[in-house]
Image (cartoon, rainbow, N blue to C red):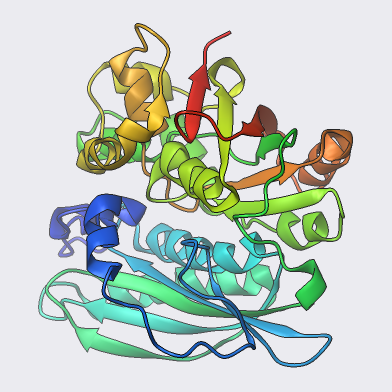
Length: 351
């Protein structure tokens, strides 16, 4: 930022994937969107709240199409651009696809932010796309009250290697690729309570491309994938469970967290989106007795550019973890398993 440029986070009412409309409100909005003809080539639409739309082009290729954009989660414009672009591309990886190009979505308060600040946001987005090996081939920009940046991301996947969020099988292991806590750290940043190591950990997590996705999709034992973003681990695990008509069990002691996250949550560094998330879906979760309030906030904490959640056969677990580590995801961990549908779709186990 320049000396005359305001803090980016001061210009937005929310930040990152915490800007998402609450899941319950969104579900109500989408109730009327039905009844239109769906072509056979549309392999994935809106029916299971999956990560991207997928349209089959031929026997060997299907197009993966997604879009994501949000207001600033950090004040550094270059970091904001990188995070937003990495987050958008993630949905292609989550379907098992390989990205091929992107279109930029840009809304900026041009009378408030100097041109050089906006340019740095765009440079950050371009850097993330270069890291993914794709061009930004176009886009659209508007003069907006709040700064907004993101991408339309397009990719390709073999139709038989497409991985949806709803194909989890009973007995599967659940693997989480990135530690949780981005929303907590972003809330601490807004309160000037996040130190330099905490900020570095947040940037490392949010700008790390989910490149294991296509390699994981090559494994027959990988049955389902999604990425954990604005609805938190609880929300996206519930989407997976509902789509598979099963119950997901999370072993809480195995869930990885970003440094300082539990402590900051206990100090009250929690986003408003966390509470909205839990209010929308908490009734679908079986929690252990005396589950701490800060742990509940971590379960529903909105993740910006979060990790892949993979449902795989038990005998594929070691290979899935090996692929994650090969791509630089040392924190990837087995956090639970899939059971036959029970009273509720998600259960948290403290043992």
